[in-house]
Length: 157
Image 1 (cartoon, rainbow, N blue to C red):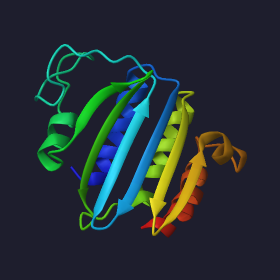
Image 2: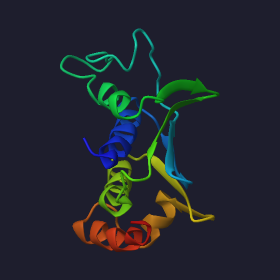
Image 3: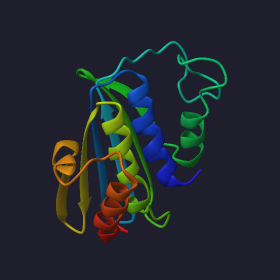
């Protein structure tokens, strides 16, 4: 799995948990990337969520978080207030192409009626993108919109 896949998996897990809101924070500092994915979905902890095969979502599931833990040993999943928070970090040298994943995250959330906020901190600057504002530029369920957003996020690659 690439590090982009972990962003995708974190958002997908929130959607599958029935959330209505997801807040993704991507922060590049020094030689490290820190990621937080918060969602207001159901959080069921009955096993070690980072163990292969642990899932409350059915059989043949529960591989994503175990793969994440193999790459990002500091990965943590915890309840914070009314949110489930997946946090992890990895070396900046494992460069993330945000333009490869963020447009699809907005499209996925739009299709699921989930509000998504993406907060990017890079080079001392802060950028915030919200699904409501992205939808104002055009429908988020069309390939032309994904192509447009891909160009918008190439700035961060």
